[in-house]
Image (cartoon, rainbow, N blue to C red):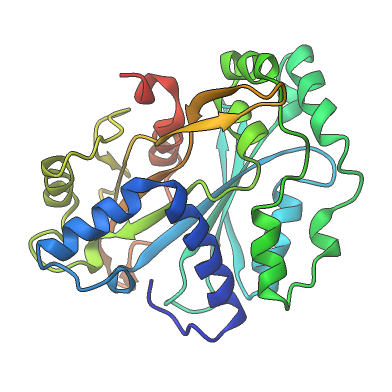
Length: 289
């Protein structure tokens, strides 16, 4: 991740990445394999295309709350996306300068779920009775990093988690993981030849034992073929639930993006069709294959 490491934004991004990498073994596995193969010298040689967060669309939370952090640091809200079947809304945010990653924030439209699912979610999120971002000192990068790893509501019960899992796997992921970083993304086009094409890079990943999300195909392509994306299948983690028992659930994953040249630089933005299938990296259809 290449940027000025003295800036407050850089410190926030480094803090987020450090916590995420500790919990997602594929991150270091992939990086170390690339180092061993001579493609890069260190983690910092990798350009981070974007980072993504999942949120609950309820009062005081959701996109309108979380985006304030990134808007404060100079990000600009860009295109809106709607995922009808998954009951999600999302925006992407362009960075203040090109060395920083794009940001993608999605939210679950809770009021579109069944009455019981809504009741379960509100039993947890109703404890948040003000916008927590408004209480943050956004100039203090340690405070911001701590916010992302501090639970906003109680650990769920296993039965609540299971009910949500069967209705919305996105809801189940958020109810346990909260604002934990969902994924970071390797900019494949910024890597050296021959792995600067996603097809070749995917072949490299599979050769080192990485399992790829094949929902919609291993490579998800925009209609203009200028944005190609793939991702690992989410890591399984041993998670504690309120009763004190632990269960294996989906954690986070790693994404890969190849942005092709256009007349004005490289292909910007995102593609709803691609993102829709990338979301499924944490779904049982992928993690339990």
